[in-house]
Length: 375
Image 1 (tube, rainbow, N blue to C red):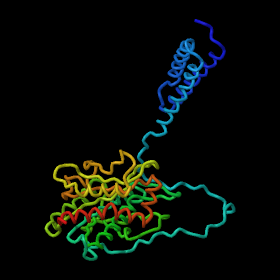
Image 2: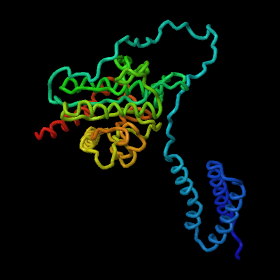
Image 3: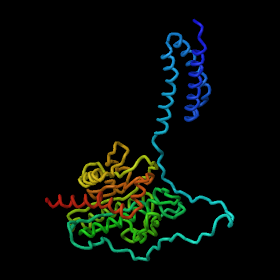
Image 4: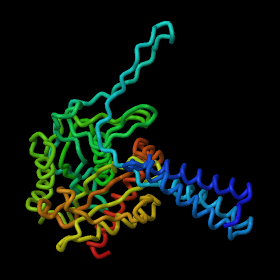
């Protein structure tokens, strides 16, 4: 074995130290047991390996050996940075603010206006169309997601997912109920009748994008019974759809069920809308196909899972599971990912939200109604 030059020894030592740093970083990140043992063993191995290789290499090859760890480190850090994000589905508690002396800041004179929820009687179902139109003879069963009574939460209701914008909390249930009201207004103006699986006077309130919608207050089923949470509440919602088919199946030429939700994924890198349906036999997928096409045409398709706007996993969602819901046209629509700034703005902004609902809920319903007529 020939004697190494000073430059070759320095390069070998640098290579050894780089591998020690990489091993230490990866070991700490993934919380391996006894990472230092692995690091030292790896370092010794690569030092000896580098020394043997260097004896047979020219200077450019030696430089390549030294640079290789940097490339590997870059790949490892890139994979760590782009790992799939965690799903957040929890109640966000208000932060505890520290007491600040009064002399530090000037007194606050402005106050945030709290939305006033009207004291309205529960309407009879179905809600009849406001006027005749291209959706005559169509009944839409609208299911605003979440909102049932939940005694274990600090708000008393199932809020659904929670997200923050400019330091303020926004709640899924507040927006699904408002979305249901906005869809109802849009289709009733075109001749469609409506049944809500759950109703609350809070859905009549509209707030600017800077303020959160109010959470549902005492939501009720069409029968007037209080809406529960968990499987009991979900099965009661699905039963509304089944009862609608039994009661009005001969009166309407088309009955469609749409459950409105907001995706709980907390990633700014993922955005978009997707529709979920029951893929079992006996289900008519045409409305799902039309909704999926509208999502893609409007550039609303989600940017993960191959940008596929359709998912078939009815077992996860009781409201569209055939064991509970007897309608043949039934879908669950996730109208955005609020962890993404673009989706959050579209959900909070009344004009953008209605434009999206018109495109992905109403227009596919109109196309389906025309197909049923044979036009």
